[in-house]
Image (cartoon, rainbow, N blue to C red; front, side, top):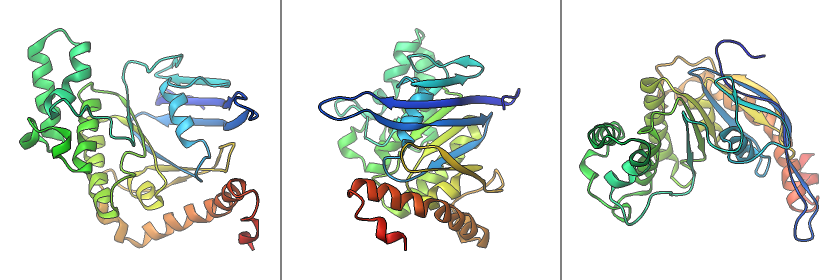
Length: 276
């Protein structure tokens, strides 16, 4: 149901990839209904191959829906990333031949004509992500976590009102992921943006989210949306609370059977016996 507080929405959205190279068509997603409230943090979890990334790509305008409607701020999303939407992927998308400062400034220089404003916003984004001492460094001189901060800063500098993140910390160790989650929560609170995060990690999804959408095996659809009830002023210390275990336990209860189905599809059904 759309309200005045709705920031982005998917209504009856499906995505079917056409047959190619001797393979039949793939029904990857849907039908899916999702309403994101303005300023909320929503995470999506589900089995591998269930269409999580496809959902994000459709919402971002990077992949067309086969059916249904996608909207951002009341306007249809059609064929391109709308102004006001920023996307961060798992892959390191920094340009190795550019410094941190020039990486962060890359898109903004195309969007703004005022060099002074570009410099101010780049400086602020670099400082916000804790990269001030590395502004003149190249990506090869940074850790994986720092390179992801560069990619987030490059998105943040454009001041998106909706931030879509597809497994941005997937390549990092568990401890670094928790700390990067703290940075992401700080970014969310201080910018007031709406955030949708795709992740495989149930603890990450539970720690970060106001609500967690649990998806079925392909074709992906929401089987439940779990409200966490966390305060807005939260960080990774919340994982020590008893309620945190209850949330992650609920998510695994929802996803265990779906993950077995997905594994069965991938192994030709040989995993079906695991459900007993």
